[in-house]
Length: 195
Image (cartoon, rainbow, N blue to C red; front, side):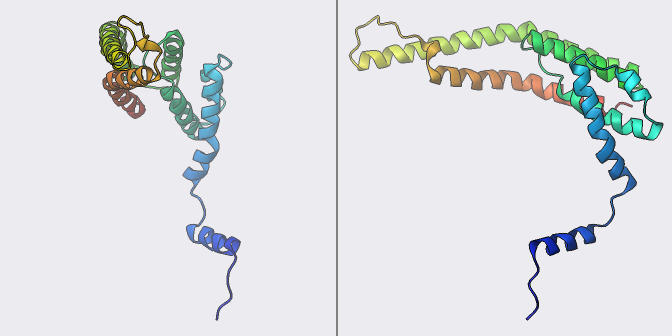
C-alpha cells in the first residue's frame, strides 16, 4: 500500500499543478487593492486621486484605477438621506477624475441624476402613501385582535411600534426601491465599460 500524504503535501501538489501566476494576475493582486485603499481614503477626504494616480506608471495605473472605480461605484447609492447623497456625489466626482471619456460618463450621470430626482420626488410620495396604507391596515388588524381578546373598544394600540409592522415596512420599502436599484446597477455597469 502507498504512503498516505499529509494535507500540506496534497495542497502543495495542487499548487504545483496550477503553475506560476501570470504578469496580469500579479499586477491585479498588487495594484487593485492599492486603488481600493486610495478610494477609501479619498472618500474620507484625505486624498487627491489625480496626484495619486500620477505616481504610477501607465501599466500600473490601469490596475490602480480599477480598484478605485470598484470602491467608488459601490458608494453610489439611492439618496435615502443626506449622508447617502453626499457619499454618492463624492464617489461620482472621484470616478470622473479617473475616467478618460468624460462625455460618455456625463451621459450616464445625467440618467442617474434623473433616477435620483424621481426617487426623491415621486418616489417619496409613493413611499409615504405606501406607509400610510400599511399603517392603516395594521391598525385595523390590531383593533380587531384587541376586540377578540376582550379589550374595550377604542383601546389605542400603536401599529407603528409593532415589530411585525416594522418588518413589513422594511419589505415594502425594499420592494419599492428595487426598481430604482435595478436601474442604478445597470448604470454602474455602463460606467464600468467606459474608458
